[in-house]
Amino acid sequence: MISSIKLAPSSSFASSDFLPKTHSGTKLRFSPLPIIRNGQQQSFNHSISPQKPLYITLVGNFAFSTKTQKRETECKAYEADRSRPLDINIDLPDEQTRFEAAQKLKIGIYFATWWALNVVFNIYNKKVLNAFPYPWLTSTLSLACGSLMMLVSWATRIADAPKTDLEFWKTLLPVAVAHTIGHVAATVSMSKVAVSFTHIIKSGEPAFSVLVSRFLLGETFPVPVYLSLLPIIGGCALAAVTELNFNMTGFMGAMISNLAFVFRNIFSKKGMKGKSVSGMNYYACLSMLSLLILTPFAIAVEGPQVWAAGWQNAVSQIGPNFIWWVAAQSIFYHLYNQVSYMSLDQISPLTFSVGNTMKRISVIVSSILIFHTPVQPINALGAAIAIFGTFLYSQAKQ
Image (cartoon, rainbow, N blue to C red):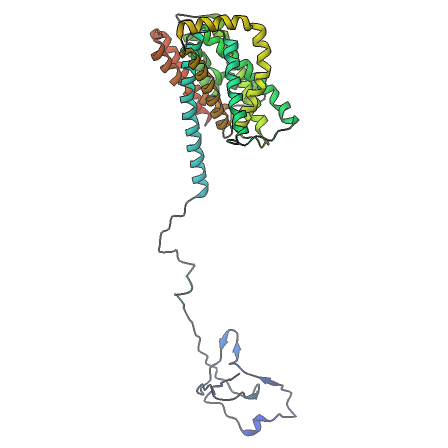
């Protein structure tokens, strides 16, 4: 290594300085680089030469100048000044915000699809019940069609089959019981009264949801939530007493359906926690188990002989279109419920009930227009009050 030494003007040395002094306690040190003390480089006056050899010197023989030069280097090209902000404004996307926005959009698409499929189902279901007034068989066919669709999807690998165990089916059993009761009760209601009246009564589902959650699950809600139930209950009552074609069986069917579906939603949310089964496959398993529960009751209540006679009568009156009506109501029933359970994957049971109630606006309006249902102004006012109460409820829940 080549070293250079720059001498101060006051420094002088003789040839004897290169020899060790026996009387001095100083030690020999190699000085290949300029001496650095306290982060400062000592300066020498001798010119720097890369050709001079390595010198051996004794520390202390040089009289260094007391004046030192402090060198400061600012390297703006390679080192940023952290004390000052960047001049370039770069908007870094908030990943959490983007994720939440995507989730809201996803749920919105689920809700829109759910409502559209539900409208189509209700139209075809009412057409079938008008020509074939056997709600137990109609309900059974809906579950059977959905179960068959999912079995074919699993067999052809269009959808991945769920991995279930005995514990899963045990947890699913109360959900299936509630689903079966709610499904049959709603179908019975629509076989006796207008579709619009059934859904006006079923718009009171948030009230049932809050009451069940409060008294059975111990959940508490803000005061505005309880106050929002008043217009819901009052509007449903006003619509019921002013209904032109009021039927107690139809009214009770809608009320029982409300209560059963609230329990179904609560049990479903609990059963889906910690499970690897998706919402789509969860509802498929639910349909199959409900089908097993419903079939023997449908046979006992109505029976094959009644079904055969009613089927022949419907085909003779409607023609081949009746078969299409039955197929359509069964297919769309499964599809709208399947999408609703895909929504339930993402939201709470109460939010699900709110979405289920808001969809009734489109169902009520479409059924009145298609079936030319006579509606009195006071009856329409009751429906509007109930729906407005549901809106207040959704706002109070936020």
